Length: 75
Image (tube, rainbow, N blue to C red; front, side, top):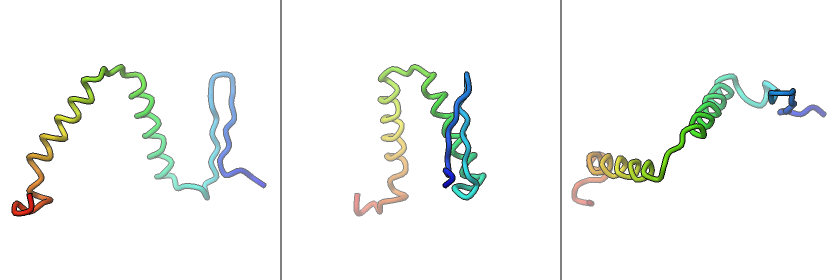
């Protein structure tokens, strides 16, 4: 029985082998992009204020755009 996904290691690398029947090339490339983003996010050292900034951005966006999703009479 063959494995659809296998992981091997060398001295300084992980080697991943994926059966083409498991996912398309586009899905694999998206997965690799997500891995890159995770890697970059782990390198950045944000403090807790970044979460506050994110919440403020969402709040401002919702205030400016809620009329597109909820009729004024229902707000």
